[in-house]
Image (cartoon, rainbow, N blue to C red; front, side, top):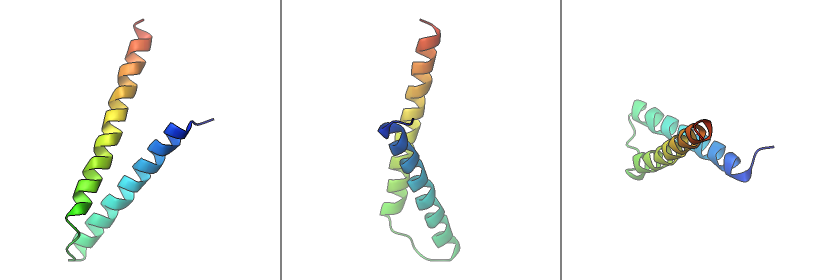
Length: 65
């Protein structure tokens, strides 16, 4: 069973993907998206990247003692 933290990571990833898609679609349609949108996408991406790096670090630590 997935933990609450794992489910939060899934929702964060989905939210980031939806926001990024919305941003690029609005650019493609010629609309000017909000200046806040790229910052939100970067924040969610940074969150996911840091958690991914932490997972790699913990996995490596388990393998090497």
